[in-house]
Length: 327
Ligand SMILES: NC(=O)c1ccc[n+]([C@@H]2O[C@H](COP(=O)([O-])OP(=O)(O)OC[C@H]3O[C@@H](n4cnc5c(N)ncnc54)[C@H](OP(=O)(O)O)[C@@H]3O)[C@@H](O)[C@H]2O)c1
Image (cartoon, rainbow, N blue to C red; front, side, top):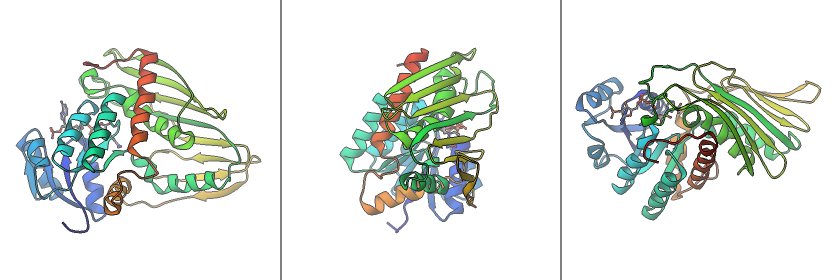
């Protein structure tokens, strides 16, 4: 095995293409792709210049020239696909939402731990340079006492009832696709919520079309979250502290700029970044770092926290009455 891990891409949809482009752009090694069809695997391999195109996910995970599998399928298949990869002895980077629910997430992490393999949730925002700097500023006390996170993830996405985002069979809805970003951000800032309140409206297909969520914490902090599937919002975020606030510019969960602003409006610091590609490479670097260091969990997003975040999503779904087929 070379120094760098050899990636295998499972699934040939939108996000697999974006991830593969970022991996290749930033010097990672992608040796294979696997699809439910040979045609799709061949087309993906040709587009990205990948050596091997497998006609099944089973064949991909069995490939001896693959060390780590990137799971880019809809969320209801994440646990099954990750289990397949782990049982074949591969490390796994799983797209968000990590799984459909906490029970599935816990089983995946338990298997990875038992096998001594890395499993990481592809919550790409966590490892972006602006988020690294924001964590530093908060830890250094630059905001004083943090009181609140105000954040939205509002997108105008296809409303075709067959689309993945509208389809209960494919884990559709705003929460697991979009709302998970601000919820994960709140977890990053404040840890486990002690109170969860959610209000939602369904789409005609029966998934959640929009959600307003408030998370409360033992120290009195609040996260105020909105997410919607069929309307474009600012997609900005503000962290409010007693000595300063951080305003993250749109789109807050992608590589972007932010300002550290005093109560009187003075800008203490403006952080800008120039990131190659879409910004999905940082999570890949984290997975490779963990493997090289012989660690199963990092500090930024340990798999145990991914399980707990699924628990928060479960509680929100319980409150809004959203169950997926088979649950
Ligand atoms: N990080 C991000 O910015 C981001 C953005 C968008 C989506 N995502 C996440 O990525 C995952 C996939 O989203 P996407 O937008 O890439 O979806 P997509 O374009 O529909 O692609 C999903 C792929 O999964 C595979 N698949 C396996 N079983 C399937 C089934 N029953 N129905 C449909 N596809 C199936 C297919 O690949 P084959 O035909 O090759 O098997 C398909 O191309 C979701 O969990 C989503 O939350 C993340």
